[in-house]
Length: 202
Image 1 (cartoon, rainbow, N blue to C red):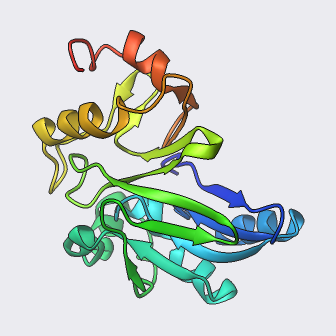
Image 2 (cartoon, rainbow, N blue to C red):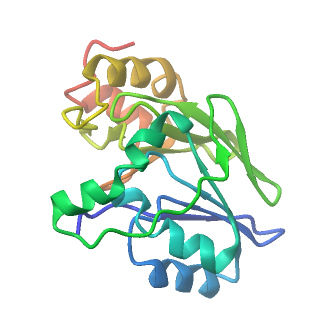
């Protein structure tokens, strides 16, 4: 309903996979993993909002994968039923978070590693996931094509999100592909040059 992006990353050598932001349609996510011949070992929430986490319980139950989230978002995660009611959705079952995802930590799937970049602002525990060898970053709801994450929901902070983008994301190479939590992919260079919210940031 909210058009969030779920990303499945696979390690071709070991067939291990990481599922990032399973927001809904758990069966479709599991079908994709099976169709690609992968085995999910990690589930990562870039933040705790329901549109990025509603299918986490179903996917975790089906795969046995470890669930990662930055613990600063636990208060928001615990309010998932309230968010569901606000949106007119059936409250999903909440999965237990297995591991914290603090800044600078690594999340492994097979031989691949994602580095956690703590990028608060949309939520206190918002993270982005950086894969330097692939020149890829999953930015959650921090950075979008031509926009940035909203900061008017509980825990949002407009100054923090700009600091996160300037200090963590705009330091990445311009050719880095950005897969955001909603909408189309982009690159760091494109957003540095064209994103109206980022003009003047360094």
